[in-house]
Length: 298
Image (cartoon, rainbow, N blue to C red; front, side):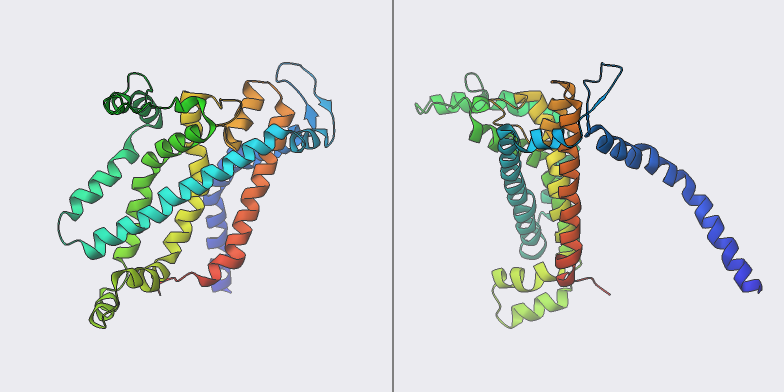
């Protein structure tokens, strides 16, 4: 009986200690999410004292708008570019620096991680100056070879590529350090045994390193999609504001644009709800299918 009462006492103490965290989650996560879903069924401009109930009209309007599909297409392109630059390339860099190189490892790690501590606003301004099509350093160099610098901020494909590069410059170092730490934890005995058997470095990477660091790889995959799309909001806001003709906008910026520029709160809330459903499906897919093949040490 004493043991049972002790367990009950400990459980209640644990619940009491969780109360501040639960309150914070309710105030800053669950309540805003619930209120966003509520607003998605109303027509409101954030100024009028009344809200007009329109049912699912906001969802119909959003999903039938060609601009929405253009923004979703842009978002898909952003995701692909961010995954290549911030997942595939850091994986290779971390492997080469940890396994292949013998010297200057600390220098390379510090150099690659340094941009992640720089503000995205500063990065956006810096890249805007460097890539200025008239007076930027790159434009001046290209002029020496009679090569014109495209006005990338006014071209759909170029704008997405440059904005993705700015975001990647910020995110790359953080992802690299996490992957480096994961690869560094792979057993050296297994790698050395593979080398003694004559296994080439590329095969060691694909057959040993990636499977044994897959837990971190999946984590980087998820946060690159989620946080990458949030980080790209800043350079879009600072440089292009979604132009030309929504050609550089993504779903995160479009949600902001609908609410705080066009004051169509219902449309913005409907888009946010659809995007949240996408993230939920992504997590379900990750836990249902991907986690089965992930290697966890011990």
